[in-house]
Length: 375
Ligand SMILES: *[C@@H]1O[C@H](CO)[C@@H](O)[C@H](O)[C@H]1NC(C)=O
Image (tube, rainbow, N blue to C red; front, side, top):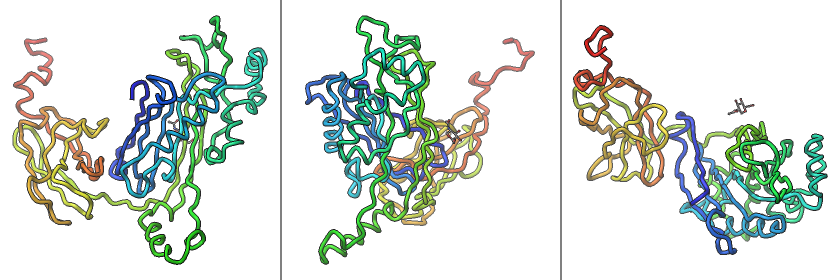
């Protein structure tokens, strides 16, 4: 969405266990605002635990606290994913909710707010922070946790400076930029909320939804802002979290591996094997990636997995990669099996070295000898 960006990075070792990633967005224009307000979210299964990140930019101005809560509720109600067991944001085991939530500090005058900040007595302001106030009133907000606001309000600064707004408007500083999280409350034990007939169905809901059986522990290590940034009239906020969880699975869905030496001097070979039944498709492909790649579409080249019929589980399939598609210079690469239905890389080979091609020198890609005529 215009003006709202959400990027997720992962260590390569976790990639094959990040599955079913989906994104969605909401414009909150219906409330009379245009352009940059709204929300974007991404959800995925992380080792079988359903995780959702939700970035919101809510309505501005002091008097709109209630509207901000309404917008947030609207976002939670309307965002949906094409996933049967976690169609909504709050169905996810862990939700991180963050962004320019735009809540302000009520009642206190500008002078009191500034002197509390300068005197390092931030706690004097907490009880008048609108989000903290709203959490007391709204049960659904209470399910979201937040660390203590031990950093200075991150709004509003003069640009390229760490002085609060000196313009004519002299806006009161506020903790507009926040990071909260929510662990899905435990479902009631089966039988407690429904009559007998419901029991069977309930049991299967529990097993399908492996995430309900294993708890996940979220610990916030730091919650702070970075004062040295000057590009915005806000300061960025950082939250560092540790997630402790029991993996619901730790084997890849597909085993993919390069065969023999790879260089652009000859066609190369790879094999892949589907290890477990999943929604594989003839639209799946295997990409060749430089180690450190940033996105699934960042491949150097790719091959379709199979043109006609899908392979059996445990069948070893060989694919050839045209030499003209192979990079000329020696570098570290990795092969990734991309599942179109799961929107993610579900199998990753070990890193391997592509050897420098004889053609590299011919095409002038290799520096000439230090005594060569070109120096
Ligand atoms: C986050 O916190 C952990 C634990 O304190 C630390 O080991 C890690 O380096 C931190 N990560 C970043 C990016 O600061």
